Length: 265
Image (cartoon, rainbow, N blue to C red; front, side, top):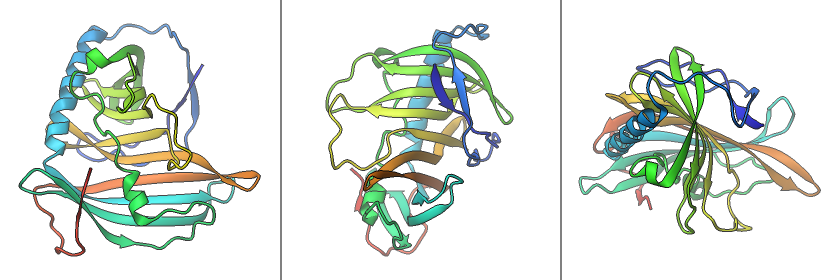
């Protein structure tokens, strides 16, 4: 059985899919018996992977503001016991290079997880459109049925890499594809590298990502959450990462030119 975190989502075609409430565990069989979609699954895959390439190209021309926060959860009810937050502006220079600059940082009240502000920015450096490009040659796609995300009707696909080449990152998980525009509006999964996880690696492996409709049929990642554990002596403390992007705009930054910006790898 595959555990799928599927929180209630408040989404609109022209606005962001709002952050979900605490997730409810839903079980999906490995080989479900579901009615076929109107289009062959192979055609749906070709359409949404082509759309991913278009969305990635559009995204690279946009700047945005991003809030990155980490919380240590002090109780089973999810009350934060400590936190750290940083606000970043990401923008694109005329040369096409993307730069990040830290605008504000809260200071840390984390007791068990010690992160520098740049560590928080590093947590955002993951493939946001991993299925763009020649995805059908790199991945296997398994149709799993349909799901309602607020007003959206979506197709669900299980995605697994055919091969994992060390030094590259591959998505493994689920994607929700809007049935009209054939665009990915949500994903849940991890990134595989084919290499052992370093002992000093930053936490957070599984990411629940919701997108916002920004340009035409392009949906940009706007809300990302990941839950993990950090060792605290003999115990483990639940921790949560939340990344929220907003104010998408094409071109140069709209805020004053200080503090200095750093190029994004």
